[in-house]
Length: 455
Image 1 (cartoon, rainbow, N blue to C red):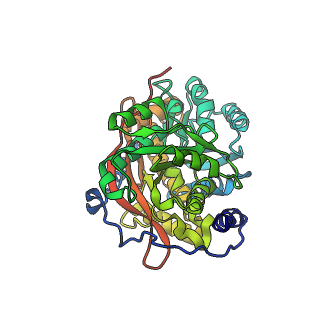
Image 2 (tube, rainbow, N blue to C red; image 1 turned 90 degrees about the vertical axis):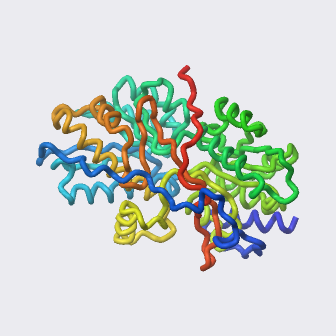
Image 3 (tube, rainbow, N blue to C red; image 1 turned 60 degrees about the vertical axis):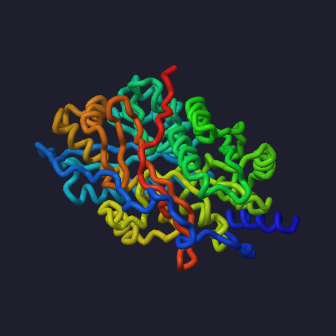
């Protein structure tokens, strides 16, 4: 009981930004202790650099265009996936404008608060679509929005560029207008299963047999259910991997996940996959330690679950998170060989943002703006400024096929694709200086295809 109380203190008090007595860490994985898989020994392959032949055929100086974004500026997730997205978008657009805009067109950012509540997502979208001129594209930031708007954006011919990638929101209908920034959640889950299956002999917990049983714990919303689709479960079965029924956790910083994890463990889970982020991941990490099972399971997460905010919540107890794996479909702040990462670093530092905000949130949205600028260039080359509309924006994306976002990641709309299909696997490891960071253990590979058939 004493051990359980200590970890609960870590989770609840750290979430309230207070300090808690450190929990002793034993045998935390470090960057030098774990043998990488063979794929990790290869030089990391960055997403394709932005093409050099995307240039303006005409100049439209004096014109302006609005970039429409909807995000949580207030509410429990505002500091996790809200303000970082907005700050990054504004910083990138400021740089694009300072460099002459896009073919002379200045880009203005408009943001409305949705708190990630589905009714507010729809309300804001309806407000945007009534603008004159109508938006070419919008940027949303959660699965509830992509699901609620998936048919509306087709009817209105407004592209939704979205990090919330529930499979049906992107692929139903097949010719939809929702484009994912990251691989769909079922593809990510399948990729993690493939990694575990292929490397089981090396990564399995001590005493585990050959059989792999996976327990998934996800937030009680569309995002949390996004991994365990019928297509992903069929892929698991093809590998001979058992996936237990989904356990839900409340989207609440004070939620207790003891019962859910005990259910998974009692039913034989030797792998736990987290379809959550931020405090949701911290809750699972802390509770597994409290139960004494952290080193008896392989722990993995969707891409959003491997981020700086998890380490911020754990604070000085961040080494508790060492060892868990995450699907990673973009570069990270440590990939300073990539010009896009370097530019983001320079901008981030010049703004004086605290180190604790150096998260994927900022890096992803910052680089997205440069990818959007390239699409706008192609669209204006095709249709001119006066001919711009959502259909022309989508046509430009499809003409490009893959859209490099400053070399940090890429969107993929080749053929029937609506989301990228490349990702690394990284692991939280303790660095020589005692900090925790995310280290590549499998380089970029193509993910299994688990897109659904349109309903």
